Amino acid sequence: MDGNGRWAQERGMSRSDGHAAGAKSVKKIVQRCAELGVSYLTLYSFSTENWSRPETEIHALMELLVTQLVDESPELAERGIRLKHYGSRKNFSSEVLQAIDAACELTKDGTNLTVGLALDYSGRSELLHAISRLVSDGVEVNQESLESRLYTAGVPDPDLLIRTAGEFRISNFLLWQVAYSELYVTEQCWPDFDADSLDTALVEYASRTRKFGTVT
Image (cartoon, rainbow, N blue to C red; front, side):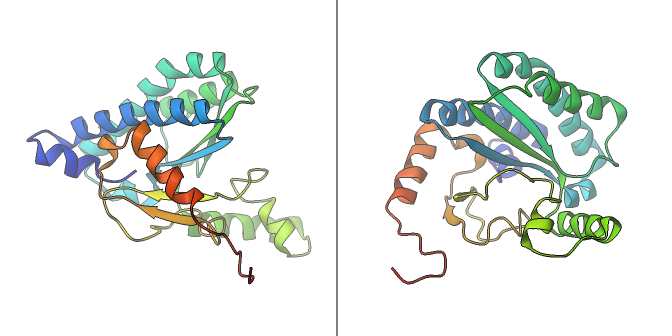
């Protein structure tokens, strides 16, 4: 979900204002995915590398995260939308962890849509975490045993990876899982990405032929 800061700066606003606008886009996209019958949506919300940003921006992001989780999770639960956290827990404050855990617990029975929140997430760190668990458990290393120890265990690989703000890179996101995902890049910054934008991306995705390394 790139471009919050750029979007704000172009309008003479603070980066925090951009993140607040981006949060509104999250609500629109979650709602549209639920309407369309999308089963899984994963949002790259805060990468492990994002901890290197200015402290004031990190503080604003964490405040926004807590507010959104507290305010939105009751409605999500009513609509059958489940929240899951993918990533590390060690760097968050107790307040943030409490908000994440409470929202995930409140929505755990949702079956209409699973929204994965990649928070303090890094694809490389996830793989190291899974490998460490394999070594600790002393089990045979194969695709099944590795995937069962990823943060996303039990969740299917993404069909479509959408990248906003014109960025043509993976940026350490779901490195194992996106091996055969279709990529869609738009110049729109995330706060401008709405339901119509999602529909456009899905129409483009539907026009492609997925081969998964085979010849068809």
